[in-house]
Amino acid sequence: MGQIIAPFGANTKKTIVGRGASSKGRACGRGHDGQNSRSGGGVRLGFEGGQMPLYRRVARRGFSNYPFKVTYVPVSLSDLDAAFSDGDVVNTDSLREKGLIKGKDVLGKILNNGEIGKKLTIEGVKVSAAAAKAVEAAGGSVK
Image (cartoon, rainbow, N blue to C red; front, side):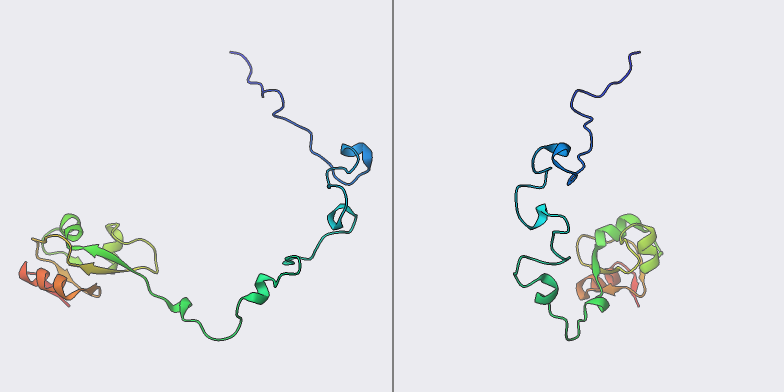
């Protein structure tokens, strides 16, 4: 077996900038003139060239309900029919175990998509009115 060799030009020496003309030509890779070409040059963090910076454009007052937002993942009746067996209890933990909802802060809502033919007991999960009617018609119950 031959040895693996990097192709020509793949490994280049690191450019050390701002150490005189010998480093990489006249301007040493810093451009020609201007604020960033000089030692100690540059702008502070968040500076946008005189434009109103982002940290000052964004409102910093008031109250936002976003941290308390609850997200619901839609779960169809056909998914329940495929994942659960007759007589099972459907709750948030069992939905998470079966992989129908993912994430610790995510909740599920059962919607009337598809058919259900099993008697399921649904506890502590949001259910649409049409889905609740379909579950009760199949012999199950919604608590």
